[in-house]
Image (cartoon, rainbow, N blue to C red; front, side, top):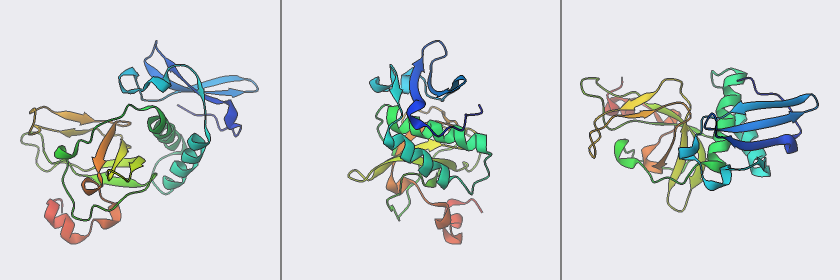
Length: 204
């Protein structure tokens, strides 16, 4: 989806489209309306998502923050726009979630992260016979410093499948736009992946 570049933020509004089961963003221009879909469906939305809501100052600030954080990554402008609009929507309209810590590996540092940071998380379990799981790339969309955890949105195009979890023996697929909640000690900044850590994770 090519999102329209338009600076009059008061003309940006959120609304849920039941026909396609997606939260959408509408941009009102002088020549009509442009509508973009997010990846959020009804099952993930809180009650604030139903009806029309215009962009807030927090939406705008987060949009620029997320775009700046993604600036040096290898995404096209359209891909960055799609990721960022989904991140802003997730921050404002996603249902509250419980942490899913048990299915991700623990790191000793456990340092707080910041909104807009790109971080990694390593699944604890693999699909049977698949070997070491690939890491998941997430954008931090919200931080709860009191409980030392954060909301993360997957930004990789390739789904991450976590297999045979200890609790239910089911496969879990984390796709582009999927939101999860993890404690600080389950995520790590890419810069912290030094040689010793790589050896520990067996991903060398």
